[in-house]
Length: 228
Image 1 (cartoon, rainbow, N blue to C red):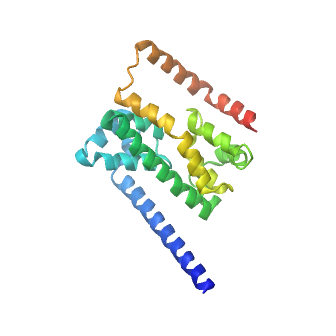
Image 2: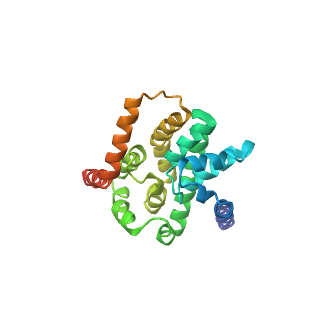
Image 3: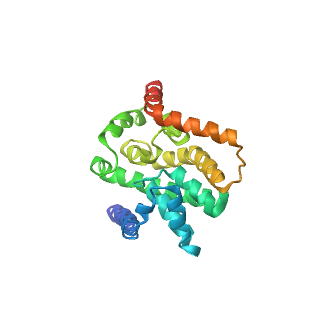
């Protein structure tokens, strides 16, 4: 009886895994065949592409945010700005959060199941070597939260590396719920114009962006050394 229950649980697991992989493959095939990835190189182009689907635009935006966790040229927080322009702050926020967390969970499960042979297809050895050991350490949770909160850290690859660690999915999910929303909410609000930003604030933001682009790698290395 116990053996039969174990076999049933295994069958359920592999069925869910097959459905997950099939769904993920379907989204990738659609993203590639529809040309959606070619429209993700600029915010304005992406906005026009999504709006072109009319009533179904929210489905396309969901796919964009889901795929952004894995292969998108535009980071998910940047595409959330585009979502804010189209759906408003809360529409963009909720669609983005559901899509990003769903994508992150799928990536986590696949990385946990298929290991390094899977993650190496999406994460470079350089990035993997830099973060994997720290994520698996006692301060790994702190680094994950910082990667979600700070704009110069590669937050979209976290799911791959956490999947290789010993962290449970429930723990990772909790960290995502605590740290992930703030950047997405701010980006969605910015895109929706719910936040009235004076010109001098835009000037400061532009200077900060330039500073991060020029010094992001140095800031990243200093932070990693501090967390170690």
